[in-house]
Image (tube, rainbow, N blue to C red; front, side, top):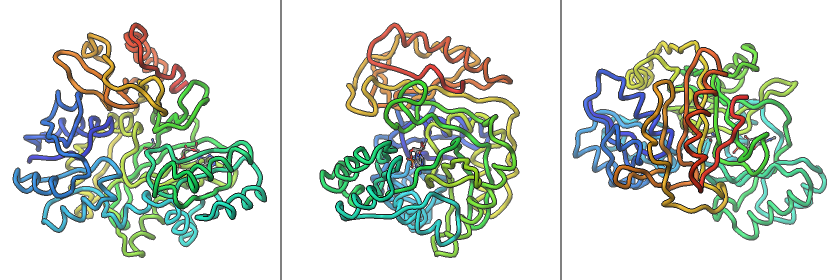
Length: 416
Ligand code: AMP
Ligand code: GLY
C-alpha cells in the first residue's frame, strides 16, 4: 500500500518512522514533511491545510491510507473532504475535532457528560471577565477558546497577571479570532499526564501514559510551550489512576461524541491532572500529542497501519507495548516560544546518531549536506532503554554537539 502522512513536525516524523516498519507499505509520502522526514519518505510541497490539493494528490496517486497529524487540517475539514472523495483516512471529522478546536465547546461537553474537569466560565466581554477574576482570586487559568499552537494558556499567579491575559486576548486580539472568547478556569494542582487512545465510535484503545514538559526552562520555569520534552510510561502514576482516566474520561468522551452526532475516529488525547478527587481534564486534543508521540510510538510493537485499519473496522487492534522507558528531549530555537531566528545552521555531523538514540526532526530543512532551522521546536533526541537513567545519559551525551553552536537551547532535566 501507499500511504500519505499530512503534516511536517516531529510528530509526523515519528509517525513516518513507525509506518516504515510496516511490511504492508511500499511508498510513504508526507505533505509537506521536513528535513528529517525527507530522508525517509517522499516529501511533497503541499501545505497541511490545503484541503483541495491534498485530496487531489491522494486521488491522483491512488493513496491507500492517509494519516492526519496536526489539528489545523483536522479543523479545516480534511477528513470530511477525504471521506467525501471516497478516500481512506484516519482522523476525526471537523465536527469531532471541535473537542480540541473550541475549549468552550470542550468544557460544556465535559459538563454535560460528567467528565471531571476544572470549574470554568466563558467570556467575550472583558469587563465581565475581569470582575469574575477579581471575585475568584489567583492562581487562576486563562485560555483562548480556539487554536493557539499550545500558546493560548496563561496560568496566572496573580489577579493582575490574569487581567493582563484576558485584556491581551479580548482587547488586543493577541490570538485573533481564536482569543475572541476566553475560558477562565479554576487552577488545579497536581501531577500532569497525557493519555492518548485510538478511538472509533465508542471503542477506545488506550496507549501507555506519557508526560510532557510544557515550560520552556529547567525546573518548570518560563513560559508554556508546545512541549520541551517527554517520557513514557510515567513511573509516579499509579495504575488505578490511569484506569480511572480511561473509565471516567476517555470512554465517556468517545461515547458522548457519538451521542452528539460527532462520532470520533482517530487519536483522542486527554491532558490530565491527578488531583485528590481523581484525574481531571485540562484539555482534549483530537490528534497525537507532540512531543508525546515521539516517545510513545517507539514503545508500540504493532504495525501502525494495521492498527489504523483494525480500529477503523471496529476491530480490536490488540496493542502491544515494549516494557522499557522512552525519553525525548527537544532542541528549540533561542527565543522560543517568543520570537526566534530561522535559517540557523544546525551542528555539522547531526546525522551521526549513536545506535541507541534517535533524532526526530520538527523544524529543519536540508541545505546541501547539512541542516538549518525552520521553526521554534527544531528536533527531538530520544532513546528507549530498560532504565530511564540510561536513556537520559545517552541523549544528553549526544546533545553536547549543540553546546558548540549558537542559537539553540534544550532543557537539562527532562525525565529527571
Ligand atoms: P493546555 O494547553 O490546555 O494543555 O495548558 C497548558 C498547560 O497549562 C498545562 O499543561 C498545565 O500545565 C497548565 N494548565 C492548564 N489548565 C490548568 C488548570 N486548570 N490548572 C492548572 N494548570 C493548568
Ligand atoms: N504536547 C501537548 C500537545 O500536543 O498538545
